[in-house]
Image (cartoon, rainbow, N blue to C red; front, side):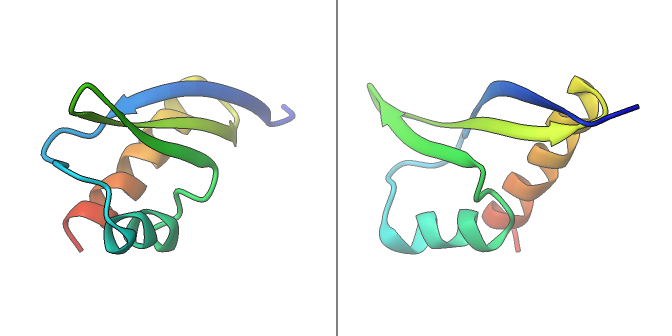
Length: 71
């Protein structure tokens, strides 16, 4: 089965502001395929991730986000 691209958004609870250090942590943790942003005080990450399934894509993204927030 060929990998597909999946697009989804994760809400980044606990992120209060997007400083350069926070953004660097996301990039270094493997979130280089995500657009990190904030709207009305809510941080989010919009991913476009390749995987065999949507659940696999989301689980790997969640793992990367957790690694960035809690190294």
